[in-house]
Amino acid sequence: MISSKITGTGTFIPSQKIENSDFLNHDFLNADGSTFSAENNVIVEKFKGITGIESRRYASDEYTTSDLAFFAAQNAINDANLNAEELDYIIIAHNFGDVKPGTIQGDTLPSLATRVKYKLGIENPNCVAYDILFGCPGWVQGVIQAQAFIKAGIAKKCLVIGAETLSRVVDKYDRDSMIYSDGAGACIVEKTEDSESGILSHATQTFAKEEAYFLHYGGSFNKSEDQNVRYIKMFGRKIYEFAISNVPKAMQLALDKSGVEIDDLKKIFIHQANEKMDEAIIKRFYRLYKKPVPKAIMPMSIHKLGNSSVATVPTLLDLVLKGKIEGQEVNKGDVIMLASVGAGMNINAIIYKY
Image (cartoon, rainbow, N blue to C red; front, side):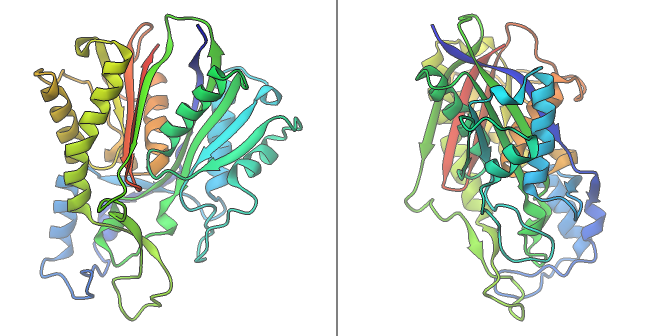
């Protein structure tokens, strides 16, 4: 039976490290433009307690999202020992295009996937390059699409990338700006007839009623700023409640479709959005099976890297596979889950056997 397997992974983590202390002199405001009663040190400490974030990475000014995507792609291609000319598809998940420092527009002409194909020097016209806008679950959805192409017999090798420079679309007066970061992660998905490994199942959902605009574009909280300049905004409490209610059920759907028992699941690579939220999601997921949460089931990178949207899951996967997160590893035969939630509101999950 034809299936799909990940044969290489790669990441690019920007070198510019931003500590929580770097926000102590920011002028944080409420949505109505009023000032907080609490001092910034209190705001920052509470933020760390909820999200788990101690630092995050920002891209250097000379790099855009497609540059980060290219660097991660090179690493994944090298890891898979692949000739880039053999690629059938290049799928890039992002949300804002190439945003240069100091600009207010995202550039998507040409597409970021086309830019990466150009940077890779691929001449093969049958290598199709396109972008996917799917919120934070974009990279996971890209892997699902790659599998669909392979199972349909129209592709054998696909490059899937998640890349973002969120630091350039945040309102510096909004305390939520501390969550976001920059980065890129990538993988090679290839055709396999090895029934003992690869993608076993997946699930994807979109909730677009009252949830549709939980993440949206909005003006600066500083009302003296140009309100026509838009920034990423979110209703944090609503997203938290939505995620802990709905993500565990989508994860259950994917696992049940795979036929794998819950006790055989070795790792869950979940979108690095908020430490407390991720912990609550995992706890509720295991509660659906009336099971306790296993020790070390959920690797985390948010503490040092922040939330880089579509890049968090592939980056986390690559770091664990390369032995760069202490106490975490994936071995041959292990069944893992890749899961994410984000703007749309979209949820997805993949069950994968190494």
